[in-house]
Length: 264
Image 1 (cartoon, rainbow, N blue to C red):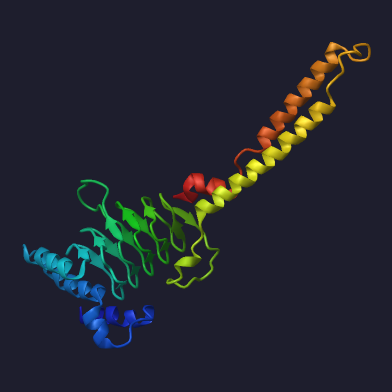
Image 2 (cartoon, rainbow, N blue to C red; image 1 turned 45 degrees about the vertical axis):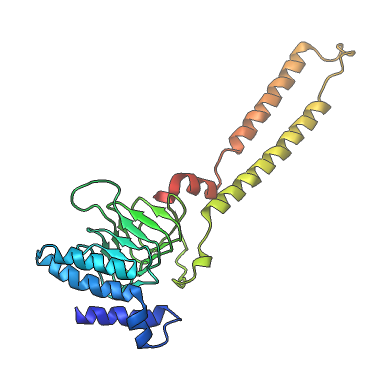
């Protein structure tokens, strides 16, 4: 346990530019303090000692604002940054070198029995205010954007944003875990694609109206054009409209990924 606590201590200097000396980290970082309480409580919890583990968890919550059930399994090198409002459930599993920001909830979705909280892989980053709920699997090297709500499994090497959370692939690009501003905005992309589609439709409708006005037959020259010709013209117009409708279905990649959840 001592080596695990040492890894928790060292990772703070790697990931927090505000960490200046060991005294500040030891006495002024609630994330580290909550983990120290948890690792002791978790050891007692595994020994089936009643009351004391939960009481230690309650004291840690009072002192740090971070609530970690003593039954949760947390790997080494985990960093809970600031941490106020973080809630980690009883059956949650957090892999090594995870980075968790304030307001994160790793919770359940009901009153299920058994494994009911999420499992996070290694090097997972969970942004501010994100909620990861239920017995789901989050793969390695996953980044969950601030404010996202994740309810389904996420494979490794993905970025998840939005409510509900949607996967946005990064094409293997390596991104600094602290750069929240670099997260893609799936909703903005989908809205932009819809606006572009509406503009295309408006242009095509205007072109169709202009062609229809040009093709309107004068009523005073029925000699050259019969009823059949006007019916053919109407059928052609309807056919054009049908083709435009088929062409303008929602096939944009951004819209499809947004509506389908990109695989989630």
